[in-house]
Length: 134
Image: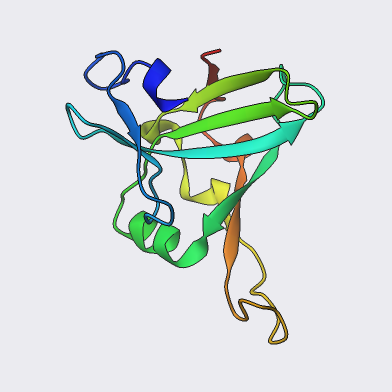
């Protein structure tokens, strides 16, 4: 996905690169201007519609950045369950609200990653709905 898109900040083509796995709160970077964004993927029966909520990642780094007023733009990638089609949606950081990021219950003490806590993104609480790019 990253290489084929245009950077929303500098408008250069083919400059978006994937960051290493488990990089906190960002998944892609523009190797020209340094633009950072999160990418969330999910399966969908209808790639023309976004679900009201999407799973996020680790809650602690997300919460810490939000407390500092730092939000990264979101790319939302809807994959058709048959893997034959997909759509890409974009939500800029300035249209996000703290209320749209909801902490999930920590994993139980018997879970493999006991105590780990994720979050859910509630798109209904954004200031505007994401724009479809593809």
